Amino acid sequence: MKSKIMIRRFTILSIVLLMAILGQGCNKEKTILTPDEMQFILDQYSNTLSASNDLSKVPRRINENGELVTTSIYGWTSGFFAGSLWYIYELSGDDHWKEEAIKWTEALDTIQYWSGNHDVGFMINCSYGNGLRLTGNEAYKKVLIRTAESLIKRYNPAAESLESWDYREAWDGSTVWYFPVIIDNMMNLELLFEASRLSGDKRYENIAIQHARTTMKNHYRDDYSSFHVVDYDTITGEVLDKATCQGFVDESSWARGQAWGLYGFVTCYRYTHDIQYLKFAKNIADYMINHPNLPEDMVPYWDYNVVDPGLTPQWDYDPTMFDEIPRDASAAAITCSALFELSKYSDINKDQYFEAATTILSSLASSRYLAQEGKNRYFILNHSVGSIPHGVEIDVPLVYADYYFLEALLRYSKPGGNR
Image (cartoon, rainbow, N blue to C red; front, side, top):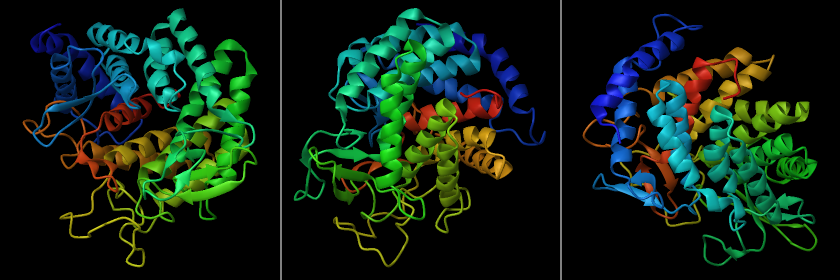
């Protein structure tokens, strides 16, 4: 592995060029990242690579002692690290990052045959999908198509949806979910659309379209906020339950879930050009960016409704458990990236979406959210939330927050491109 000194030498010119790009098309007095901050990002991921010698253990977060925590290749976040490396390669132009991205991407090879999780879209599209886009490697195309074939095994014609989790008890320990579909699953449709584009086989696209339609019908409320989980009868397709698993209450708006939905419907429009998806995405975006509980810096609380005094959670929530209600930088990063893309497609409120995305990106790049040297050696952003009801990953760096932050940087610097 190249030393940090070598990486710094190879990348400093590309960083200066990157900052010149970031300064174009916006106020010349305002840049998202300084060259020093960009170098800090490269140093962080150099540290992560130095601490990661086992390709079966993929970086995910840090623990309370600042130590790196990993997941197996079958963990739902396993594709984000390789994806982040691809984005760093795209930002820096340094082949060192390309070599590392290839290595961590190909470590996920066996996932293409696995149908045990709906998140194979995250796992393979973020890694192999970006690899195909940036290298044109024909072998990667085959992996994407094969993974799509594995994913559609989770489709149920009665429910007209892809199953997210297997039959299980709900988080409350009493409700049973037979065919639970979570809003997160909108993010796996990109893999299916891409597989149809690459193969010419419309089965994948047709299932993606039907899943999106079912989600529009059953997950969303009149104000365009989303339930987290909708459970279906596997025989009749009847809706059995609408609930949350990681949010404040069933009727509240879990922030990362709202972001997944927005991003997913923007993606549906990109592939289909069906105006219903664009309108739906705009309604979701308007709900989010105009929400009365959204902080001024536009980085949401982990749930949009957590500050509503009239709501009492069904789980054991102690309002004094935090000095302040946790923000979720991961939800902000996902939202930011989706808004940049939405601003390309929308004639109405186009500038509002772009300005909102720029505000979020600037906030995440500020000292409040950007990792501080000496406290977080491995990731870019602090202050993300996994699941407060489960008591896990609360106010920590998370690899997927970095992935969508880097993607948002690219979409800001290359407004003409999808990525």
